[in-house]
Image (cartoon, rainbow, N blue to C red; front, side, top):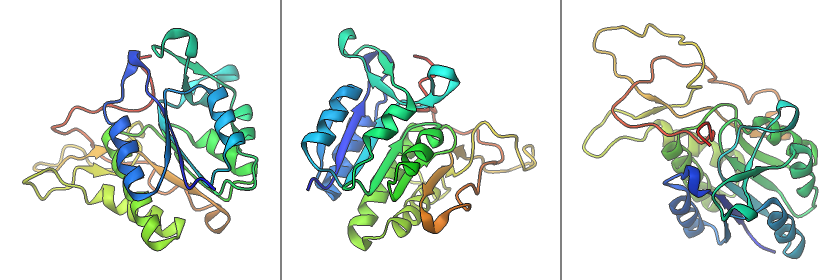
Length: 240
């Protein structure tokens, strides 16, 4: 049984600078097979050929596919890995209708729609994002999740620890947290012009979908001001 399959879709036209480092870091915590710039057909073959327990997607998502659905951006084989190809969410979700898969982690922007379809196919645990997610925060979140899981063997605890890791993350030499777990596109729920206010980046809203948490996954969809000193890159593929 393969413990983890990591699928990186990082086309040359819209590079995510942390994608390959993220996969390498996660594989330090959980033994993994890593596929770089694969197609949806490659994913199907990987899942059929080798029984897989966990799956992690790293790349652009939230792309508008057929009928306006938000889906993953796979690498387009014919383009020399320079562009992305979208596949219907129903077809992607059907790939995971396998008894061996117990976790699907969709680490890309606005992946909730697909995440719920994957969950409906019977995957016990699905991690996804209800909003856009900042690239470096997404890397920190997934690495912390798998690091924690390999110690506690509990997906709910790992999810909670990953959220704490993002919320408590500081820049070198500073003690002010960098991120808030909130939707970067939601209206502010706080007074944004308070003098002396410390502004943080909106990391996004992560979700854990499972039986135990059904109906309680949507906390934190709004936030206050999120301007800050870092350049922010989101995994939504808006510039593809």
